[in-house]
Amino acid sequence: MGLSPTYSRLLQVPEHRIVILPPGEPIGVAGLKTGIIFIVAKWSGASQIAFRTLNAVLAEIADLHDLKLYVADTDEEPAEQFIIQSGMIPSGGGETFWVKDGVLVAEMANYNDQKKSTLREHTLNVLYRE
Image 1 (cartoon, rainbow, N blue to C red):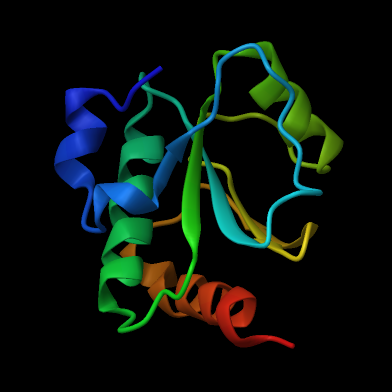
Image 2 (cartoon, rainbow, N blue to C red):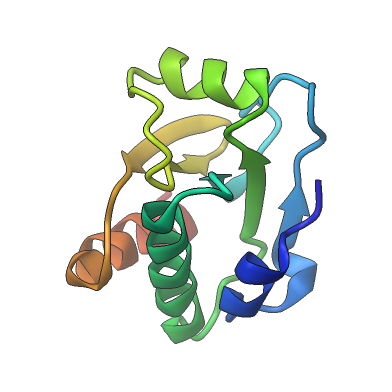
């Protein structure tokens, strides 16, 4: 899976920060140092709004250090299982997970520009938390 043209147009961070997770493979966080996992639902307007909002927040942060934005497709079984195992219900709402040193530290879904401050807080937390 690559980013669809719709999602590619919403990118506001350099492409080298984007990692497309392979379809069909389990999503693991244990090996991730600093990252955000975003579950894309190509068919969902809510997912597109969340992706746009997340990208806007990331673009506003001066130094993202080594942060990566991992993208998985909600229509793939491993992504759905990852969402369920995290305690969320798959909704196509741009489920987003912040990871620091192999541990999920925050999650959100179905958000928009009104939640930018929360997105910024979660992101700064994975960037600067000891």
